[in-house]
Image 1 (cartoon, each protein chain N blue to C red):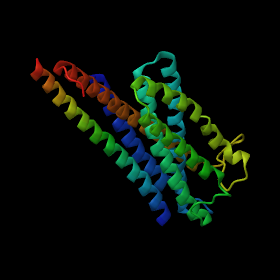
Image 2: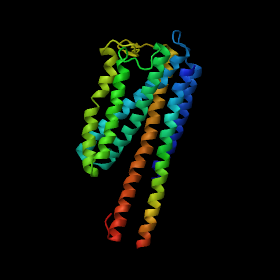
Image 3: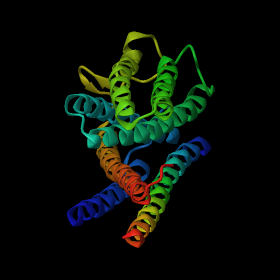
Image 4: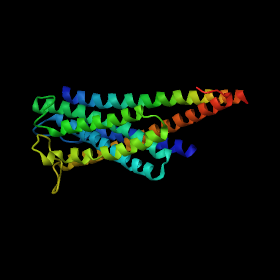
Length: 44
Length: 234
């Protein structure tokens, strides 16, 4: 039973970690794009 | 854009619900295997992870061919996204395979008796090298072309890894045989459902990861524009 738990913990741990990295990278890029757009508008 | 987010929301729900249903089938519907007991339930997610890994590398192969033919940026984004997902799921297959080996054969890494465990690790390293190759090449177009060629060549190791249990004597169970599958009907239903659920999860992740690639391109374009407007160079 320990091995079964370990295998499924690895699966869900890696899945959530990957989803979290995608979400945080998306958020960071969205903020960066917003800031860049503001800077470009400021230049105009 | 609105349609994109609707598809993403639909896929999020579908893959979330199908993964919950897969867990239900694995733990409550599928019967306990007579010889191995409950530990056999690792099989459903282990094989499905390996399937997503193989499928993701196949998508990279197709996207690589598409990139070499048409040179589209989107196909390169899909290829990179698919490799990243493939690596994640292949790593899951390697780790859960090793846990299975320990539970079943009392060895974390049975080198000689289990060639597929070794070959799938080599496959994982090959695609990690894909990411390293991209990191070391300068220029987006050059990087995309080299990566496309590498993705096509590296795919040769996928059928080799899949067929290894048939070509060499191995402890690894052979599920897909010419006569059918070595599973009881309830186990087969669970297994096939897991394959579908994992494939849905793959497409959901691919959609989100590809969107990330497009956002990175957009940010890069805006940086260029800002540099141009400022008249400087960084």
